[in-house]
Amino acid sequence: MKYCKHCGKEITEEMKFCKDCGANTTTSLQPTQNEEEHPKFSKKKKMIISIAGSAVLLLVVVFSILNYLSSPDRLMKTLYTAIEEHDYEKINDLIYFSNSDDKIGVDNATSLATEIERTGSLEYTLRQLREQVGRTSTENYDLHLTPRKCFLLIDCYRIVTDPHYVKVTTNLNNVEIHRGNTTTTIENRDDEVLIGPLTYAEVTLQGSTRTNLLHWKLKKCWNLYIQNQCIYTLIMIRFGLRI
Image (cartoon, rainbow, N blue to C red):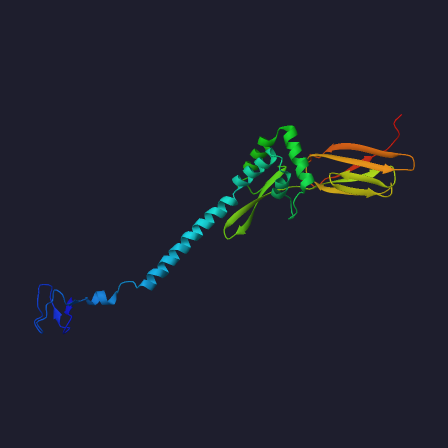
């Protein structure tokens, strides 16, 4: 129903002039009651709706980006590239010791990457990691892929490995045990020192000591391959005269 703009009286669609005031109804029609009850959106409301829509779209984009950055596929590709390029700092950033927030360290990253390359097991290592996606148990692997909540509903993945330890003893006093950039001293030959945590790989230790007459050095390598446990391996570095 429509009403005259001038007098407000009710008029019909067919009327060209108001029967009460005579005004031209083709240019003086007021909105219907339904139109008055449902006015058009104001600029302010349109702006609010536009901002809300943009915010939702931004959240979707951010969620998608974070989901990609935290995906296991991207993590594994990054590890693959780091090993191929001998980027030991990057490998250290990617792998942690299990049940802690400690990275494995550059020395361990170097040993691990060297071992993977020496044995030609890079593809095998990546295949093992892919097998773990979606699994609740990853006990039978050297490198474990573990999920954790990092942002809202997004799972971030982390590569972890079990720590290994070596107990070292020697037959002389004041022996320095060197591994990479780390040096530990055994002051008394009856003592044992704990070297670690280490990753599963070939471990190279070098012992050296000085006496009044001699400076002895001895270098030995051991392989740590026992899975799924923290190993405490006892190693004896024995010095003697070579005749």
